Length: 200
Ligand SMILES: CC(C)(COP(=O)(O)OP(=O)(O)OC[C@H]1O[C@@H](n2cnc3c(N)ncnc32)[C@H](O)[C@@H]1OP(=O)(O)O)[C@@H](O)C(=O)NCCC(=O)NCCS
Image: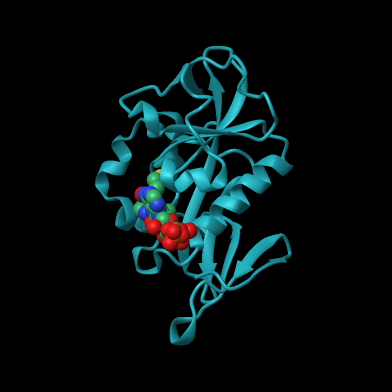
């Protein structure tokens, strides 16, 4: 249950739980010190098969888009949620866009509004930074509430197995996906070799 939203130094801060379990969660930029906790959270929330997803092909060996990696942190500093966005191209030589994911919340804090807060902050920051569209592979019943749908993705494809109806998009600039077609290509800044195992 989300109680309040306020902006503090560019971070969204809110109290998702009531009563004894009440704690403030802030949505902030991810730092290098968060990587180990973020990876453990992703393993807990999504299991080991997460690395087999076709989205991983677009993320592996790359850095997230500049300024678009966020964590939800509680008052003790613990990482309770994560979301990142990645630079992609829509088809060979196609327009630039972002791929969102993975989005995950600590399983002990599900349905407390943390996923929604991460999504709203990520979309708002992507728009503020001038990006035109965000794509993701996920459940339409969840991501629909943030404006994502499969309406504009029929001519687009992921570089690996995926369910077509789960390829969703949100235009941040109206018409950004007009005529978009082809297979998504990784376009992000490359990681240095030694960092790629941890951050991939
Ligand atoms: C999906 C996930 C990120 C949602 O985060 P959250 O903080 O638990 O979600 P929120 O509190 O913001 O939203 C809860 C609402 O979303 C709904 N919801 C959650 N997952 C859903 C799904 N897969 N499909 C439809 N609705 C979903 C809940 O039923 C709840 O509905 P309500 O508002 O009507 O009560 C989180 O549950 C999670 O980490 N899941 C495992 C990892 C995963 O599947 N990630 C998405 C793929 S990248």
